[in-house]
Length: 264
Ligand code: NAD
Image (cartoon, rainbow, N blue to C red; front, side, top):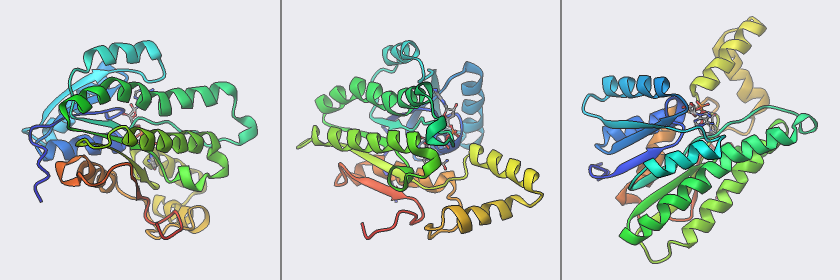
């Protein structure tokens, strides 16, 4: 399938590793121009080199910004220029009991997970509407719907993202701009790999056993019963970004391995 992304330019927040990097790589494979983002010049440079080694003809550049700082984001917004596709991917989480989650924890998660997408969308959506083409995708999470007890703050930010995504989609009525949310389930990003390695060492079992136990004891509703790969999430995101997905707008698309129970 040709996704017709050759002349499109995409910015992906938080894309030097994990799901964001996999999205950038898939865009590059489809011939789109990509702008990577991370907090440090050196990390971005390393990610650009990695992408170029994996996709030799990749059109790739980078912009630094720390989404926990409004000032840093302001600079990014001045530098970002015209883009066709915005992927609001950056997101942080912490497994914490509700009673232990401080105001600062809530505010940091709100700033990075919610305000990143708000500020970027506010900047680029008017231009997309004016030229009558654009894609905005918010990377939410299965947690927006499952709300694990140790991830209440994170889940709340992801639920908020879905309201923002749906609301923005409604402002695109009658245009060729779409805004959608994607809800990944447990995905094998570098963070998840580190968690598996650490738990395996601590418990004296293999990483595979830790992963199997996670689905047996914690994410019991998963139908996939394994971590998704970052590429599996990226495939859905890149498809939704393509001109072929024009009829999907205001949707929340699950790539959760069936972990959220229900018929829709
Ligand atoms: P990750 O932890 O691997 O981080 C990805 C990127 O975010 C890195 O490039 C990192 O440098 C960047 N980043 C972190 N804080 C930043 C900040 N303040 N400013 C700028 N960049 C920053 O992430 P991931 O696991 O790939 O997750 C990506 C998105 O997918 C997040 O929104 C996350 O909530 C969501 N998600 C992940 C999973 C999962 O299991 N991995 C599941 C559901 C949803």
